[in-house]
Length: 476
Length: 71
Image (cartoon, rainbow over all chains, first blue to last red; front, side):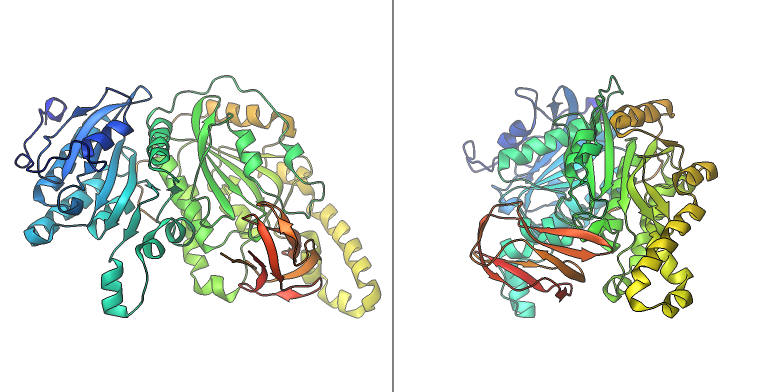
């Protein structure tokens, strides 16, 4: 198929309304996305409700399509959906990112099942492209029904200030369930950024939304190679007390090249952070436990969030750095009923199947099942580093002796129990062997000084073969 | 608009850093909880005035309990 030389195809007839100055004009929106003067249309400006084009983003090629919200609220009909297929075929043929700008009420009602069928074909090509080319969605206005599931099938969803995503709008919700809710609360930045995980990036302005899409297209579509890396002392960002929780963001940002980090899902499941950025100029993905939230415990939502990020990075050949400081899985009825076993298994699966270089760094501690889940040696980590003093164990020493020496502890007087516990814990730590033993077993490759963290991780990534996983990125 | 700061998990209230009536900035520590053998600061996500403080040192909070209200 010679899609690379496809001339603009006429997907519908010429528009009847003048929209040259309408801010919803899809041509204006596409021009805002691409480098100035680089947009070439792939389909005609007509009444199909969709406009597609190809252009440059920071000098690298991307394909994009945009709902035409000036016609029937951007509803998707047969012709508009065919235009999206043209954009996708071109992106797949050229191996470049495809960006969707969404502002649409869903399928065109007046076309009936014909439009429904066409929307389904869009879903199918999105799935076919999944893991092959990066797919980025920017929701600029309401995106309902089919226009909600379109973005949801892509790798990253950015929500602009006017963006609203829902299956059914407030009117239908009210008439069916009686719930009185407005579009903002139903599908705006707060619910999707914090509660549902539907949206990866919330942008405060429309310009910022285009800006984030451009950064993502560059990070995923133009990954570059690892160059020189300068070191800095990351351990100075840890609190003095090993018991004190802290915010992991400064560590992730210092690990990455200055100003390069772009966090996905910052407010949803914030006890694990998933961040794209560059290390020595090369795109990498960083997964880090954040002790400030839930003590850094893994739970069902954070495991799922991290699993999807790992699979996305693996599919596009983005190497991973995993920063571990995890006390375990969050205990509780809520978690078990929420499927922490099923959803936690996704993270095990995602890491174990990943073929990209993936380097683990244990900064303070890694306990139990959560230790395994955070890209352990046994799951196939490329290399596992630890900072001096880090702990790798089934659980903390005190917790361990409470189980191992339950009877003996029950027999001693309550006022000295703490002391005895502490003594037993020291003994237990000696027996367990600490980092030296972990190195002996081979679950830690090397204890590194925090000052050479950046170069150690960069070298480990550069030394591993550049590979990518052969799979799609199902929206876990 | 008032914002309720709620406990994310079961914890002991180890230290109370602010008092009702205090002004706080985005990022300030309100209380420090103890859970999973860690001291976990609860951080304000907005600037404002503490209109109510519902916990004292030594209390046990459950997931979802209101710790403070910021106006």
